[in-house]
Amino acid sequence: MCLALVVSGCNMSNTGKGALIGTAAGGAAGTGIGALIGKLTGNTKMGTIIGSAAGTAVGATAGTLIGRKMDKAAAAAKALEAAQVEKIKDSNGLDGVKVTFDNGILFSVGKSTLTSGAMSSLRQFATNVLNVYDDCDVAICGFASSDGSDATNLTLSQNRANAVSNYLINNCGVKTKQIKSATGYGENPEYLIYKADGKEDMAASRRVEVYLYASDAMIKAAEEGTLQ
Image (cartoon, rainbow, N blue to C red; front, side, top):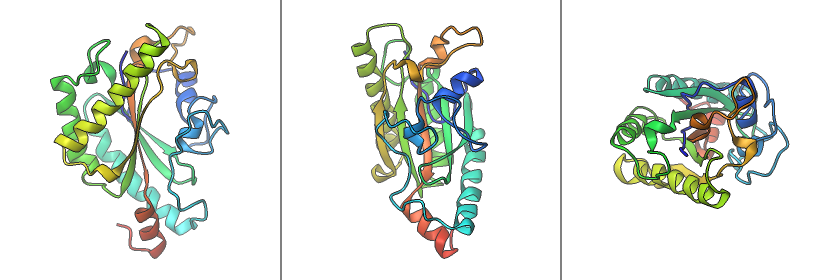
């Protein structure tokens, strides 16, 4: 039962990816986590909306500038070890970045204590991405595989999300205000990862995902034409 960050090193099927999140290419294939990153699927079960309070009225030029900034953040994240990076859309239709680290790197099975390797990966992530692109807001989402009870996995996924958030803030110099949420989603079937044969990929389901999306400050700078 592990967590993954918004850049994923998991080998998941298209169905699994779709159930988690839509890509910039055009919407989610399933319902899953749509509400988490905005209006991709119409599903509001996740509760947390990834997207600035600025609303949807962002001009095309500003959107292009934000897209370029997110491209840079994604490129920096792709240099990380054991991480997969995907471009996504937030609730405003603006570009964002999803990073997922293999849960085996973050945690031991059934544990929420970060391993030494996880700490190293998170320090690298903070140094090369979060602390450089500190005008990106961040959401951390914890998930678990289906083994174990629902209650145990929900608590475990929340503890793992908290462990990642706390380490980034307390040990990596990430500002508290940058991390907007750290939420565990347990083993909800909609968020599990499946293999091509339809069976669950338990190792991939155990993960923490980290989402980077445009903050109000980034949107304002883009609208003023000053976003670098």
